[in-house]
Length: 439
Image (tube, rainbow, N blue to C red; front, top):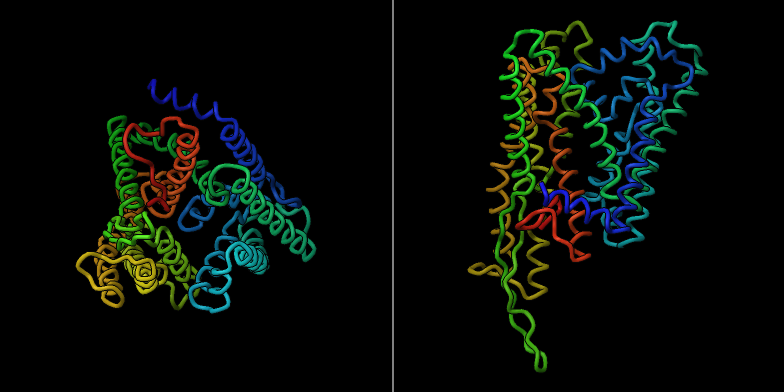
């Protein structure tokens, strides 16, 4: 406990770090206030039906990522998800389209152009998502809930939602530039954590009100949740180190090279992306389940806690993990870079053989990583089967758990870097913290 208190004191002794933390907290407060500002023209006292819809199934996940703004019909109702969608599209284009690949190699100027393209694409996505969200509002809320009616309200509210998302994007960029951590990731994490206290209190109360195990069962749940967090951290940080030896070079009286380094191949190189892609595909059955001819089949695939939904979801996660890893990790480029710098893997010939070796190792470690990721993705369904409330079960796995673990590790890594650069002790007694991008 004393070590923890001393670390907190050291954090606030560093003026730059203190300012960054306070700046980040201030912008987070602005974001949280905006999540409760209802779109002008809607009666906030008649949102019960929308909030009920936003507490169940896949729509509940969207509501959680927006920090509850989706269910509050707030000006931040769409959150940063349109921006995330645009970022994914641009990232995929960068792997397949030569123009985007060239921008990625141009350094800072290319990054600015890609950011600008992402913003324009976000606006384009909002032009479709904002009217769709308003259509859902009209379907869920009574006509008396709308103080402004007709086409004018749709146009006005669409611009409000678009402005809200763009403002949230701006907050994220400010946090990244002058705050602590990745701004957009921090905003998503805050939205997820905002639901945790209510879910925890609700679960605690249900264990006593329903005579469903009482305090003992609640403690067991907390222990299981802790173990899941530990396992997820191991998944995020796990790497397979491939040794690389660099040839010695004598230049004058100095020796260069001759050292052994490692290539850290991550067990889960794809991160949270496979689950996001898989969940996007699992939205399609919801659309088709509205038609009477396909109600039976697609209704079964729309059941968030059902067997067929989770089986297909898990298989999609495994498939997307392999696909995304194959796109992001290029053994041929890694082999060529090593060859240019005079590096080689002991016992493996440089060039094609090195690329094949890295590819084989990557394929082997991706299999257990993808299976474990699929298990994490469907853990909320198992939690629901154990009579854990839907609201609390979401924290037992899935996208929310991976985002929480990844963002917290990245932020703590930045704090530790500030501490070590000022000659203070790190956050741990031994070793170093590693975020998602840690080596």
